[in-house]
Length: 67
Image (cartoon, rainbow, N blue to C red; front, side):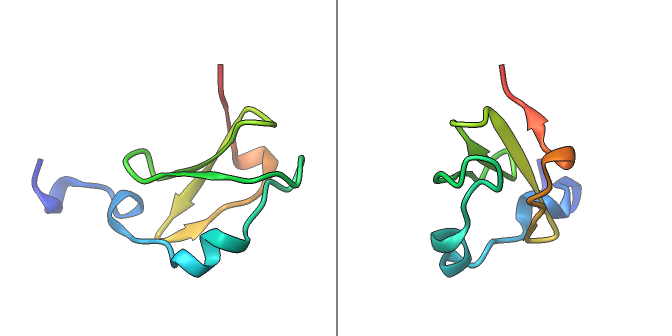
């Protein structure tokens, strides 16, 4: 897949310093950065928060529920 076909949310990098301080807004626990999916994963809440244009969207109503 060429870069022209990859959604921006998957190509935009998140500032590593931001990743160090972000926590799940529900559990206040750590998040795991899934670069390929463009998401921040909260294993405690079983939610995946999307990253759009390099900005993590930390709203529970915007998160995808994990199985």
